[in-house]
Image (tube, rainbow, N blue to C red; front, side):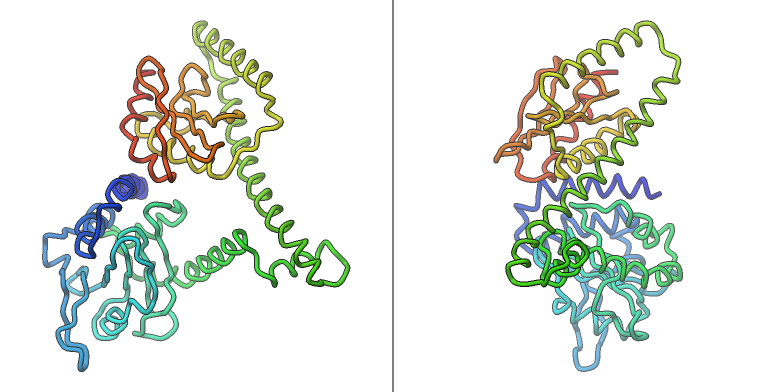
Length: 371
């Protein structure tokens, strides 16, 4: 089921990339993105009022007639409340006043604040029957964290498990907070973080001059650390794949192709000086998106990456004669290289990684050309 949800979220991400620029109202956001999320990802029938109640109304003290955008009903009781904002709008707890009031007067234990891309899930960990101010789970469709898919799956209709959701919520909440804090520090470390790390490598006083010197060094070190870890994991994965290939029995034609491929790779490595190549996190993220798209046609292990000085290549079977796509990210304007049946490349300008999803059909077709 998690695989199905991932595929549907990827499809919704592609739709977001294509349509978010033309969405101008909250109502359009609900129709274009939120209803498909409730229907395709969570599996509830948005046209069945016994499952999904739009414009859900309940009298809350003196606030009579107030509405929440959606209430999801299961086993005859309201389980989830959803409040929607315009796509791209920042999500802040001050935007959730209706959710706070409804949470206390209905049977719902889960509240969701969304702008069609980000989904913030709340429960009542801090005080019974009172919605927390911080979410226990944050999902961003356009930048999906696959580690959170199993938790999202617990909210789906066929697997809805409230006890399991609540029991895992506290850990999710604090792990998510830690990740957001670390992400902020990796992006722009504050004084306390710089001081904390500097004290472990520098014995002098932490003066303003030292702070200015080490702020840049800390930022650079953290980025290199992340890059090294990602590269190590990829090398291990590719090494394992190579061992499988070495142990496999191949035909003489396959062996010839393997030799030709190895020779081509050797020529590329020699001519382009691979020691000077630095694979960026953005290139690796782009590779993961292309692989997620192409794995509908072949197993993920067959989709390989090979970085060069001028572009990042994505290949089928690690074969230079089977290019799937290229990422031209080494200049100010990014390009996605796509291939036709004759292996002619067309470079398409892109502004963000999300735009790769707009070319999913061409990427799948290219994989299909190689049988």
